[in-house]
Length: 283
Image (cartoon, rainbow, N blue to C red; front, side):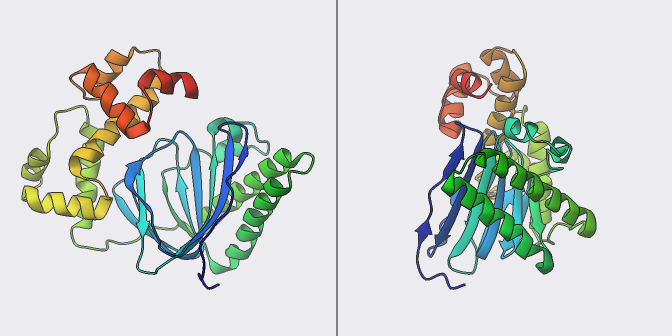
C-alpha cells in the first residue's frame, strides 16, 4: 500500500479511560521523541513503514507486521525510521478493562516486559482482520459492540501469546557497539534511581567520557540522562501513588527527590498533572 496521503482517523473510546483504538497514516513519520508513560496497556501494530522505539534500555526497529507491546507505566519514546511515512493501528486499554474479560485473559497480562513482537507473515492477515473488525465495531456502535470489542481483544491477546510460544522471538541484536553498554547503564539507573545519580558519576563508573555518554545515551534511548532518571523516578512514584497509602512527601523521598516541591514540579512536567490529582483520577 502506498503512503500517498495523511489520514488520521477518529480515536474511538469505550468508557472514560477503558479502551481506545485509532488508525493513522502519516507521510512525515513524526513520532513522540519525548519520553512518556501511561497507566494503560498499549498495542501498536505497524501496517506500513518503519518506526523506532526506545524502552527498557533497548532500541527496537519495528517494520510492517510488527507489534509493540507496552505495559502500564513503562517509559518509552517513538521516532521515525529510515523509511518515510508509516501506517499503524494503536490500541490502549486499562488493566480494569482486561480484568473484565472472560476466557481467562488475565493470565496473559501483564506482558513479561514491554517489547517488540515480530509476527510471521502467515499470522499477519488474521491479526489485521481482528484489528479492522475492532475499528469497524467501534465505528458502527451496534448493540453490544462493547462486548464484541472485548471478545476481539481477547482473541488478539491469545493469538499474540500463541505466536510468542511458537517463535520465542529474541530481541533484535545491537545496532551499534555502544548499544549494549547503554543498555547496561539504563539497567543501572533503573536499579539505583533512589541514589543521587549524575551523568558524570555514571560516566566514571562505566569508564566513558561524560560528553560521549551524553551523546550516545540520547541517541539510543531518545532521553537525556537526567531526563531519563527523572521519568524513572516519576514512574515509580506513579506506581506507589496507586498501590499504597503513603503520603506524597514520603513517596518523593523514596523515589529519590530531596524536596517535595521539586518532586511536585517534576511530576507535573512529566505527567501533566499533580501527584494528588493523579492518585484521585486513576484509583
